[in-house]
Image (cartoon, rainbow, N blue to C red):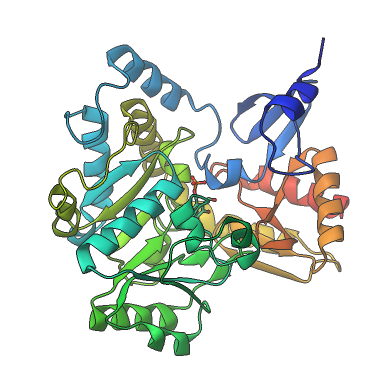
Length: 391
Ligand code: PLP
């Protein structure tokens, strides 16, 4: 009989010549357990998804309870389904009037797609700007605004009227005009290896978008829900977007995304044409129940309050001559080794030693650290010691 590794390689579509191929049997808190019951500290949380840790009983209970009430009932936007309505209310309580209407999707990329359509519909324009090394998803629209030509070239033609600007470069802001429908930007660029946006740059960007009637879209799919030490990373800047994208951690481990705007903007989907954006599963009630339970954990356990202290632990514990730089915002951290081979070897060694880390899509010279926010100081110190020993 074939083993699971062979089945995985033969029958699960592969996207990498060298997948990690860890066979994880179960997970709990910050730990993953493989088929031989080896325990790993999860320092990447499924790429910033499991902010409240794995297999939280509160989430399991909420999912079970919702499954008993009902799962899927109808396509998006027709029926009133309590967990979806309640989640939209809870999110809008955390945001301003400008961000009070939530369109739920299944994924981050779909949130990007929906926001691209919204911007075109609202402004009547087609030009969309984004930034070098930005990642907004892999579907055709999201790929069109990806900030890396290497990933796009084999899939052209993509959307016309897109342009890549330099992140944090104030001069580039002048390229935004009354022809620009939207500017898509991450407040902290994640896949570029954690590049933090400057307040000055974002203030000027906001002012220019106000002047030209361009929608400013913040992609917080990776930074949202506490990852950077605020519920949303834009709270560090005091600059509010016209549209906010969420995903990843939103669903507490289940697939859920959202694009959020004002009711006035979002209502444009109700006419010309009616049903301006359609999804079957977006805002699935079971996923929304998980999301509500996860949000409650973040708030009740005050997980965001200790993010900064944990950031300091990483900076103080990770000292080694091979580490060239540590870039970070809260618990989104890049350990820069300046060399792809060295980074890959260290990541492999860490896994061998029971700590799971990763690299970044557009920055393979740096190691990713983005643990569940529930990791304790002692667990984090232990993980850092294993990383230093692995180096
Ligand atoms: N935007 C950002 C900033 C992301 O990090 C990601 C995923 O890594 C996405 C969008 C796409 O989300 P998804 O993989 O759920 O489509």
